[in-house]
Image 1 (cartoon, rainbow, N blue to C red):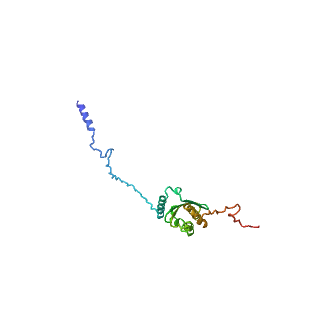
Image 2 (tube, rainbow, N blue to C red):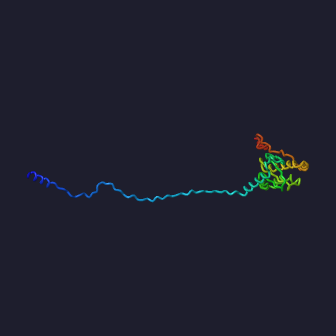
Image 3 (tube, one colour):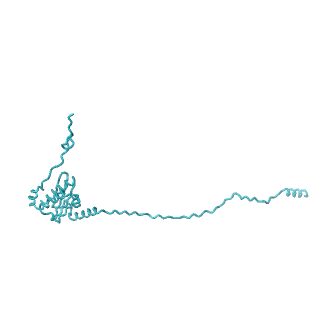
Length: 207
């Protein structure tokens, strides 16, 4: 037993225990605090764009005249009794006469404005009424299309003269005397083949 105890003590003495603990940290998970981000909610208010168009005085006057004509002519032009149709070149005018103060409205516009203030064209329109002395007794409502303003003015003159015949047959003699009931059949002559216009020929060259 003495040998065994001495051998044990020698073996224990040979063993050395190190009490030093390594200062190196082990591989462990490190948790870092998250930085608090401020969440800002932005509410975008919708933008409403309101566009308003202001009507010009000419458009307002036209709409007012259109309402005026419709109030004076219930049922339209075709429903009226005192009506006349005039033609000149390519222009066609439907004319309605009503008792009034002498207004002349062409295509829902004042006659002076529609005919651009041309004194000759305005005279064409007024001649039938002036001939009978009715320039301030009747209002004239016209729908005209085709051709130019000159042709339309002469077509309106014929239409007014024909409408005055429906007022009274006694108007025929003075209107016929002034030539206001005659349909002017003159139109532009057609172009011919080989010529520059209806009659104008190219310059003749002998050689």
